[in-house]
Image (cartoon, rainbow, N blue to C red; front, side):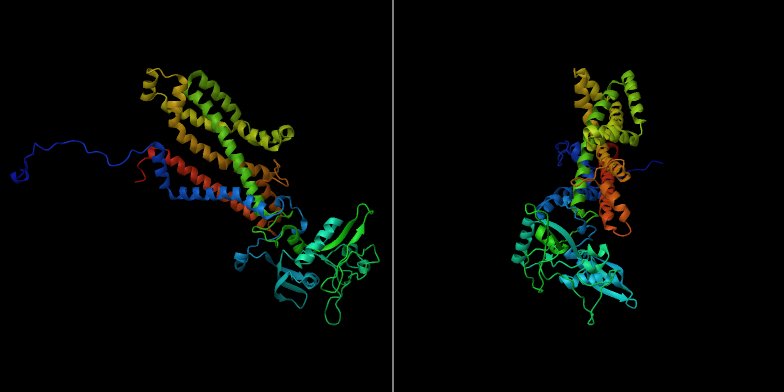
Length: 500
């Protein structure tokens, strides 16, 4: 049954009105601009990009600030008396970031720690929680003070420089020498923290009032001790044992590690991430290790991008026998185990070109194969498109067609692949150094894997040594993967418009 439309719904068309297309109010959007717009809509990828920027800035600027803070490179500081110091930050001391730890001490250890505070005025025991009939003490100790004294052998110039600094600042570094002849055990004689009478087990022998009994040397005419002494505020003298001939005099002195650090660097010891077993600042060493890992990964990614793009472009553009032969070469190289290649290079090639260069060669030997495969696939996709046929008809040569017409269309995929290579290189390098296949650890250079390997034996006692490198590499891996996934989706034309 036909439906009749009422006459009132019809209107006459005004023929004087001009009909034309409306002008676009928006500006044209290019390929990379459109990709950036779609990337910014991915909140997780944007967050990952911000974290990556923070990690890179950390690796760049932390060593610069630390070099200005220390009088020399802190990675060269290998004094064992500053080893295994806990993280300390005055702004977060309220949260336990105070360089202290909870311990259970025997009575003899408790009084030995207490003696450091009696002599120096800085008590390593900051809090006593409970005692078990004076047998065991649950305490909180300051890791920066508990090492107490050490013996140092100084030249005459160094000795007098410390004495002048003491007189100028009023901070005592060199403490009185002790008469350790009657202590018995050799270990007690060499213990710089023993300045009081004690039994053969090292436990202090207190007087009737419960005070320590000093065994300081009070004269400078016996035992090889000289008369170069300056009266101290405590009524005792500070002594140095002279050894060697008159032309090469050296002084063996007892110094307080805490104030000796002040003398050497100009400020009280405080390490934001603590120190490792060799007394090296973890935050500076981590930043230098991250800088090395970033440079290595970016360099390998760039080299693989260059080799893989050229190799894959030739494969995909010419095809046929050329593609067949080159693919077989790629298959052979991809079948070689990476760990075997790295191990052989470290055993033989590293002796000639160095560890870093041999590691670089191992990554490049087969690392470009994935990039070449991606480029080959993109060339097969675009080389028979109409605009390529039109350019060829107009006389464009092979090189122009490859790198001016086809390659720019494959650039988005290649950039994504290159970015994802970076975390893979960092992860592989960390595994190799952690397993000991590659040794990148030295006084001036390290890697994240080396730091993880060095901290693994101390995981139960000093977890901070491995904690911060583990957090850094975890953030790096997660962020780069999210960032790479966001780039892949942004540069994929088939996903355009799906976000809406």
